[in-house]
Image (tube, one colour):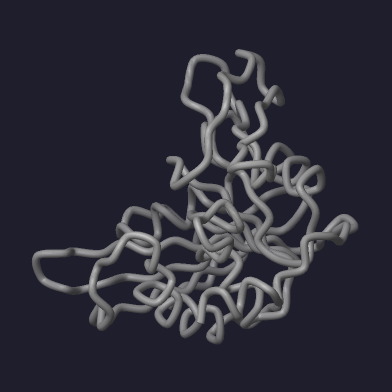
Length: 212
């Protein structure tokens, strides 16, 4: 199934100044088999939190490295369906094509939602790279065999880089651009950072933000 889906991923496209950018993340308790999927919606360029949806349920699919999309995507899709506003772009805490079969969580969601998606992971799943420069915006190519599958991007001085890859309907330079454009002084871009907080039950919100 992954090989079939990966052939459908579009690796080009330029997102033109999105009005709303979403971030998604999942928190799973392996001991209890319980999962929390979160999607947050931010406006752009203000990067203000507009909406957040959190869905809790059972992690039905077992933990298998390389197959995490089958474990996490169903919950995230349910959360995304609850959004009142349709995002123009998704940033996903996970891999896009930087995956052994070129179909990580960001690519799965992009195909199902038919929206441009970017993988922005905290760790490497496959490929090799040199060390990127120390300044924000500097990056090294993530390479698997003869193929460039992503970028190891420095978003803040003194912290580890993030692993950026094409999810769907976007090219790599554009993906790098939007990850940097969504950073507000933290290692993670704001949509992913807030989605991580929401999935962990730690998201602080103003009264005007709608969450359920």
